[in-house]
Picture (cartoon, rainbow, N blue to C red):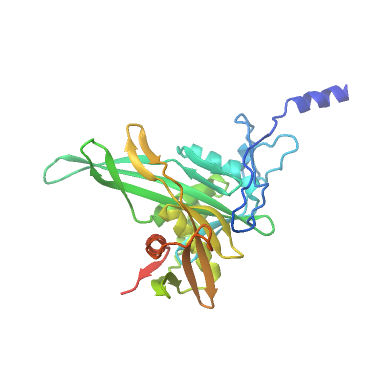
Length: 345
């Protein structure tokens, strides 16, 4: 009878499904620190919601693992890390545990997921339009302000089962409307306040109270950087006045904000592997990104004491020399989205 009862209990448990997607090695570097098993299970929607000791129900409590799955903790320790204006979340768990929670967070926030790449450690939402109404006091006419935004979350695995979460926002505003009534968009400046707002919501979703999350973001530690693009023997070089470790994180945030898609990275060699994102256009169903031929690049960082040099290259550095003007354009995109950028006079 005991054996039959155990079998019935096992039969009632939810079974895990494995997501597809093996890690693809880059043509010019070894695989990253993130191992190829950064693949996450999907969870059943009908799960029990237990109470914690302090009666706080969080996203963690709505996840009940199936037989053989990693047991989720009742509460995640989350810290806000800050270097100047750059902020990210440091969570005491591994990316495999975080991934289904991140996916559910964006779905609960009303965003559809456009890119879901657990093996590469990034997730991106679709463009979401916002229609703002305001009335001109002089003319008493109602006007409309159409904007659109999407978010990108990138994970970096750290030692001792710690994960860094980088969250960035890209915004668009209407530039013009052509003869076919098609909206032409232009990018908005980086919106760090909107990024902070969503990070606070994510912390609350993962179990931190709203008061705690806001308190951790309350203090500001602004440190402006001087960035300058110079030509060194005909090669454009972006010079950043800070040490490599901080510039590495800030550059990753700038790449995410600028629309350059980080497809891979190797921190030991100081390389980000990126491609140009598709151009957004308006359709009757919203914003669609037109797929163009993907062009891949490398962004190299070289630390020199208290400064770091950033250069742009073709995907195959030795055989695919990048035109200096194209390299300069890529570096300018990074500068325009760089956290704490203070332009030279």
